[in-house]
Length: 334
Ligand code: ATP
Ligand code: LTN
Image (cartoon, rainbow, N blue to C red; front, side, top):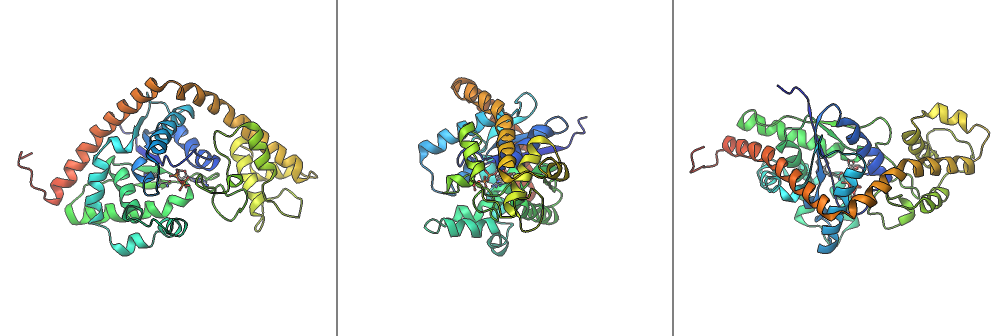
């Protein structure tokens, strides 16, 4: 009997992932494959909550799938899939919509933020985003969900929905726990370090994409906002420097104290050069592998199809169970 705990996490194909996605999510995903039964994938149904060109959606989804493999998510160890290929996600989401209060969804800060940045398209999908995310997680009876800090509130709502369903209809879903790394869980914008780094930021200097060329990485780090103290130390009020220290720490494994010692007596110039170098060597192998994989369309397509079929085998069982518990008529009498 397999006693391993189950892990699930998805990423939206809404652009090229940033080093925030990499350090806050992918690195943990890769490590967790060794000790857990993992499912990872592309949340393309979530991506359409923001207006997206059909061609872009298709390309971004294939691209993010290739990137997952490039960072070392191994389809022989983990189930890697595409959300929209498993129709049970949308089906369970509807059931969960009916177990979620309007007020609960309206409190989500991501909904409030996205409503502000996409004021011309505050669609019902954007509002129902967290119940679809709850369906993603509950369909696979996940124990842990590795995400960045920004997703904690959605995880709390998922737990509330699962507990409510179990209470109303009988034990059905595993109540999941968020898994948020100690460092890298909230990489900040390089230009406004009080805001999280986001791949959909309109200012491209604010983020480093995982596929940025070394010269671009160096330029963006050099123009990152710091402060006038000119001392590398982790302290309140030094958001820009704290963020660079966090990035450096994630890439090198050094703690803040070690970093402070290393740059004692140095200005921000030397520190920024070191951060850029660390990032370039961290991302280099991933970029090489991505280039190789993305040119092999047949391989990516067959892996995505196979992973999605496997995911559906899990998903189908849970959806059937939830429908049975809720009292849906099944004329086949199962
Ligand atoms: P968008 O900018 O399109 O809204 P996003 O990058 O904020 O997207 P996702 O692509 O869905 O959101 O995020 C995938 C994973 O990366 C999630 O686990 C999320 O918590 C994590 N993540 C996103 N941004 C950061 C960040 N700045 N620091 C750490 N983790 C992050
Ligand atoms: N909402 C998440 C992406 C996401 C997700 C999930 C994460 C969609 N479904 C299920 C974990 C589990 C985000 O990071 N914006």
